[in-house]
Amino acid sequence: MDLWTRLGEERESKEAPLAARLRPRTLGEFVGQEHLVGPGRVFRHALEGDHLPSFILWGPPGSGKTTLAQMVAGLTSSHFSPVSAVSAGVADLRRIIAEAQERRGHTGQRTILFIDEIHRFNKSQQDTVLPFVERGTIIMIGATTENPSFEVIAPLLSRCRVFTLNPLGEAEIQTIVSRALSDPERGLGQLQVELEPPAREFLVAQARGDARVVLNALELATLATPPDAQGRRRVGLGAIEEALQHRALLYDKAGDQHYDIISALHKSLRGSDPDAGLYWLARMLEAGEDPLYIVRRLVRFASEDVGMADPQALVVAMAAQQAAHFIGMPEADLALAQAVVYLATAPKSNSLYRAYGQAKEEVRQSGPLPVPLHIRNPVTPLMKGLGYGQGYQYPHDHPGHLVQQDYLPPNLQGRRFYQPTEQGLEREIQKRLERWGRALSQAEAAPPEEES
Ligand code: ADP
Image 1: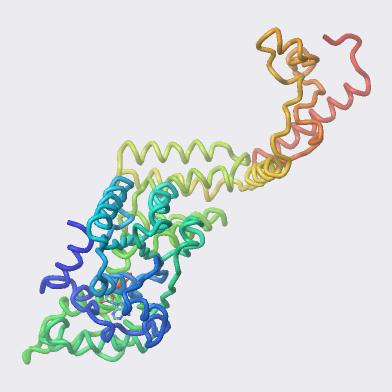
Image 2 (image 1 turned 135 degrees about the vertical axis):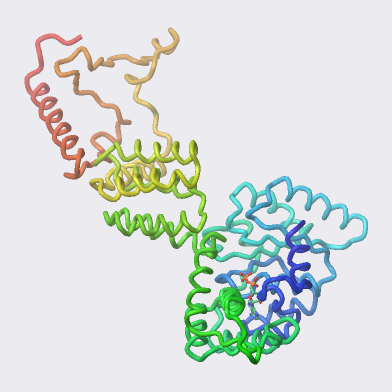
């Protein structure tokens, strides 16, 4: 079942969650976001005039992105094809595009492709859509919680308008709560709910502008509160607190807080705090996050923030990856916990990260400099004739397996990218490099009698 059919069926069904039942069906029911849907605003104008450009709705979860897209679907004369970037792939996009081309050819009808969570599409998936947006074969509507300038490829972004949704304000959330409590058909009206003032205050404050969180928590708390003798349900603070807590974990699993929490884990490890590391790890694992997603970040961390201060970090992180892959959850939780504690308590260095960053920048600036002849490989006689490999000195033939020789292109001579710190093993590496430097300059000052 596609995304739209599911949303449509949910809305119609009495069994559907409260948030789905209360999803606004007209602009009149839509609360807030006046800068988009207020009279005379560009978005409203385009919507009512049915001449939509491709656009991206950027806003926090539960602010009305899907709802607006669904209204577009209801109002437009174009065909509406929705996909979710979480589950759709290039094959789905190609199929929708082929159908759009055929439709346009036969009936002249245009197609709107709605991509929910467009930030989850990688570059090549976005590339698939680009030429058809350019040519106008499809009108694309994307919805995203992430900044489109980072998550949407530039050529696609330049062909879309970006409409920003704000987190709903307290007064707007209050309106939605009141409607939910009073509406007898789509809301909780028939259940005679009395939401106690402290519970209501807490619910609105905790929602942080997310209408879905509010409605889900309200519904859960109501169902958990038995009616009294008169059939009234008095929903108190405790029930709301519990409902929000339960909700918070499910919420993470849906991926909404995914990026914030993985960032908190990374920063806790960088800050050498094993307790915070374990806490954020548990927040993700217990909410059902994919352990391989977490471990990919641990592997990256091992090189970026520990690096040569403890090269074993990369080994431990990869072992956790193997364990997660091999035994899966829930058994893999301890392998991940072990990697987290190892990384948090390992000595830290970002010198590898900086070194590679500088090398990369050098390559970008100086371009493809030629490889010095003496370190080229003379594979054919012609190459030998051209001087390939000439004058190359084999370090093992020299005292300490070291010889003064240039390996960088001539105009980068002496350039240093890797500067070890005093942390962990890097102290040893630093001493070794210094020792070698001294040995080489002594050898240069007093060259041995014979070199071959
Ligand atoms: P998202 O921005 O995550 O796509 P949705 O549009 O799916 O959010 O909203 C989730 C639910 O929250 C809707 O089903 C609806 O009940 C409620 N909601 C969200 N925004 C609004 C709004 N602006 N006005 C009224 N209800 C809203």
